[in-house]
Image (cartoon, rainbow, N blue to C red; front, side, top):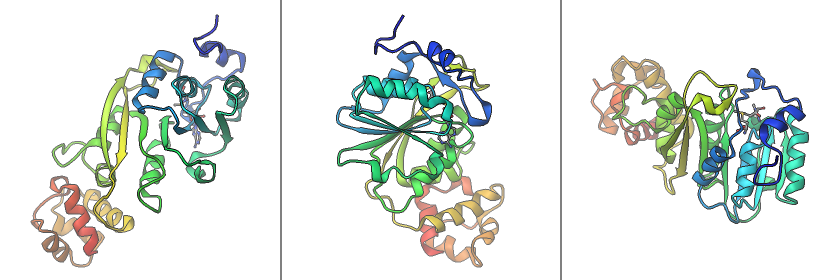
Length: 278
Ligand code: SAM
């Protein structure tokens, strides 16, 4: 039996290529093309777009992106075992899928991108998901080369990504970074049972769209301020900020933030204002 794209079902692909999932590579595969289709549609209209996919694995999401009209998919995969399965997809969609074997943390798709819109879509390996996201948000130059990120994370990480100061349980360095440079929202949850093997927790698909003009400040200064403030989140800022600045009172006064405030009470704009004074 074949799937709607004329290729074998993913279960068969994994069996035929002996792709036993490996925990060390964060491998939790999606076999349901309806679900991968939903993720592809969440990335917006794909016609004419170049999609960079991290970790295609056996290709469930890759196939959905191509079926839903992505002009090109550039897929970076660390596990060489997946390459023959991906080559079959490339043969089914001539000229539309380029597979790069390597580590996405060290990969710059810039030279491969064309003139049209480009975006990132991925069911990310959990062990490197936040590092990849932080890298995309802090790479030199803004606006970035991507016009959106549509990414799967563990629900708990997704909540930290979209959190603001109104959500004290989840608001932290990641929320400030994401809120500074993007608008982020959780689109839908995906239960553990959708993955092979099933992870212990629920996952969520998150979409981040870059802000055209984020408040100007240096990434390094913002990271220093949020690192100090959230590193000791129970302490008042006049104390915790000493780890980043010799005179926290100057930063707090300049940003109009009370010395007795705690990190979790300060909106993104407050952190940016302090970073500009650092
Ligand atoms: N996209 C597939 C799916 O949805 O079924 C697989 C997703 S699985 C959660 C994560 C994939 O990322 C695996 O194929 C794994 O080998 C790959 N991977 C892990 N670390 C990577 C890295 N640093 N760079 C590129 N790919 C990586």
